[in-house]
Amino acid sequence: MSGPPEDADQALWTIIAATIRPLRSRSRARVQPAPPSPPVPAPPPVGAPAPLAAPAGAAVPRPPPPRAPRPPQEIEPRRRRRLERGREAPTARIDLHGLDQVQAKAVLTGFILRAWDENRREVLVITGKGAAGDGILRRRVPEWLADPPLRPVVAGLSWAHRRHGGGGALYVALKRAAPR
Image 1: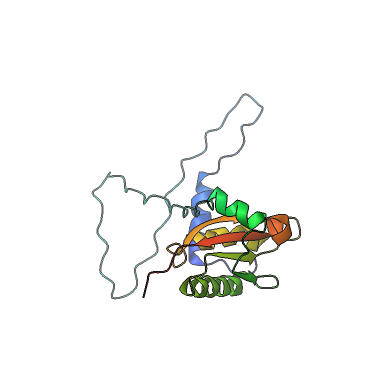
Image 2: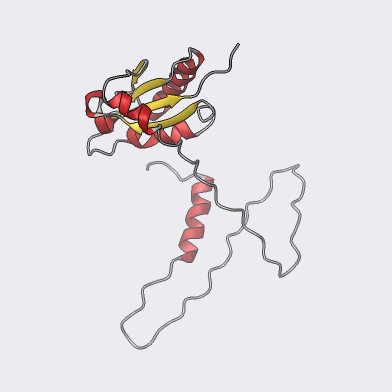
């Protein structure tokens, strides 16, 4: 990471740094660290309404951590076996090799929505495995398929058979498009 830290990064670092405690020393004398001071809030912008203050001594509730999107479920076992054995072929395929994350997400979203609109049922998404077998696209594509706008059209996904790319490709089952 290069360049100056952003405000959010600096705030996060302040919170983390305040919670770090030194390792216990091996000597008998143990020094208790001073309790961390709360981070100083940034002043509100000029003309902004004043924030509501909590009563003195009241704990301010923290918002719940954001939940990770649930990945789409597995493709039905029979459908997957038909794809693996070559009885059914994916009706469309896309290769994301050579694209960065931003490009790959945009291309994947357009491809999946177009395939769904054309009433295709199974498509093959080739991500590649990455240099160490854990490429960024290989990890991120299932997440993208679980996010809007793709979640409503994806019925399930599964890693492809070796003949279709193995661990570097995914079968994506699409839901039926609404009749027109």
